[in-house]
Length: 170
Figure 1 (cartoon, rainbow, N blue to C red):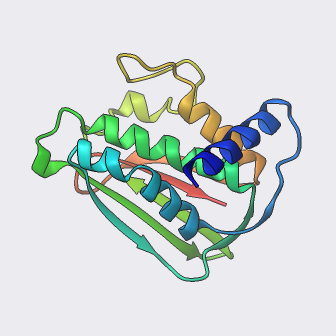
Figure 2 (cartoon, rainbow, N blue to C red):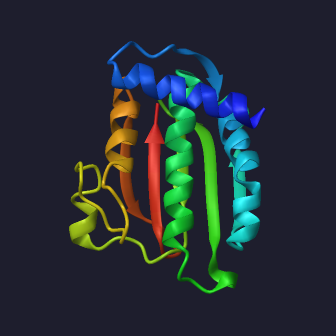
């Protein structure tokens, strides 16, 4: 199953890079988050991440499943990396999926890492700009491009409990 899931993500990225139209189908974003959580389960254990997941029923959106999986995967991996210097007991990742007003589906990924400075909040989707020691600066730029191609939007902010929050609306 993991191999098939990875193949779908790779194929979706190929379509995006070739500037082909995404294959949009009604997709339950709670299932997408569940798949990614299952895929990363061993990483959560290895990194001592406590996952809080909340999904509302009826979180269907017209999306290319593979591309949206890539977005969720990237956001979760960013959150895990952001918390790597935090004490184990503070490594909490929260993923919420719910239908918001206007018949949109909102996915929020929040961590308890160091968060963003004001300067960082002004530049998160700039290509080749990164806060990571070994980052390429492409992750959030690609995610933003994928979400925009679905008619959605992304924003980055601060988690009220400390850390960062990334919101995806499609």
